[in-house]
Image 1 (cartoon, rainbow, N blue to C red):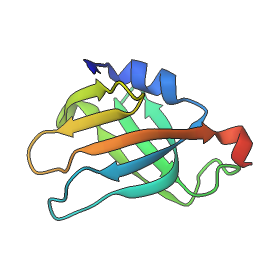
Image 2: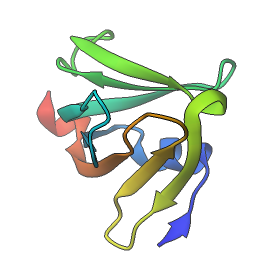
Image 3: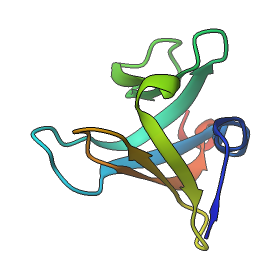
Length: 104
């Protein structure tokens, strides 16, 4: 287990579908079983888009402004990532499932 950067996470997960789940619940729980990762470097925003991977937009998603809420990103020994948030947001676990091309 080691600390990772947002750029490392995005590079590693680009083109893959991921499972994104809240580790615990603080009022809101996140659960996407087939999501893709998008990153807006200009605004430093990390987005998980769920749903149709053959569509630019998918069906829905959630966006985090990294500078505002991300406390740390950890790469676990099994290849999963955990994002720890500050304040009152539940941490999330990101597990790789497979290539987006395999889904389409």
